[in-house]
Length: 304
Ligand code: NAP
Image (cartoon, rainbow, N blue to C red; front, side, top):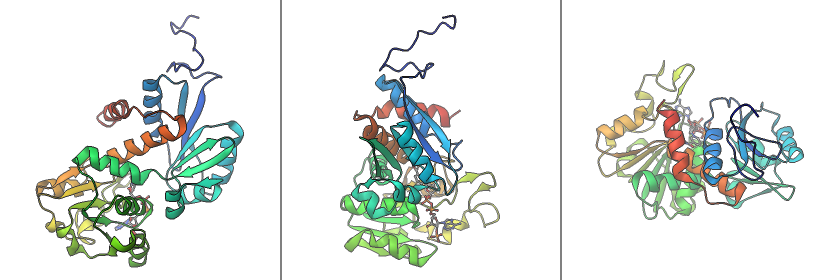
């Protein structure tokens, strides 16, 4: 051995040495090369001292069934599922948790005794992020969710399950807002922009403000911050509110800038990302996730 590294010890993680004995997990999506999931998973495996490794798999639309069959055949222990595959993955697993069934989407697949079990951890991850980022619980809170896509639906269900007193959904397409609000049962309703002022917790769950190859969604060629104002009246933001943006690239979105300027507490989307990854680690390994180590790793990466 000339590299200076020691050979791997079975069952122990040696970061430079994924080996024939290593357990593999990963993330599937398209695009996926930007994903922070492998970094979060590998930070957890390092901290736990497990000989596990996480990688990203680019899977095209239409190939999710074959990807999950490959997971089973190869003994890949777990997969995180990101856009655009969460609904397709729901249809391809053997069993789903109650949350994944109600959402019709899966963001975490585990291989248990040959069976693929699908779960949805975004909502629970969001609640953990709210707790850590703002020090509050959803119970008894008046909440407003902006958006009605997969992320918004997970948040709506999680808020209602956690005992929120009201979950108001505001979305560009009214029919989708109705369907999302229905997930909250008797505390859910479709709202209008002016409802923002009376909410205690505001969750931005659309891609508005997200930076991509073409610049920020809703900011380039769409009237800048006014893109938010087409959905809600941001002048209604005030101190005493907590505003969470699920977008984490950039960490400080236009929504959070506006909220902070008006005295509201703000929570970036990084927390939900970290905590849903921590929940995946717990589903896959049966061990308590080393959340602080995962936070440290991702903070180094995003502040690079
Ligand atoms: P999705 O299923 O495609 O839903 C997108 C939602 O945003 C829909 O309600 C859509 O409205 C609305 N929307 C899209 N473009 C809009 C625009 N220009 N103006 C107004 N509304 C617009 O997406 P998703 O999976 O829910 O993800 C939403 C965001 O959350 C993404 O940025 C994603 O990266 C982020 N996310 C973050 C985490 C995390 O861990 N932090 C987890 C999941 C998702 P219509 O219904 O009218 O089309």
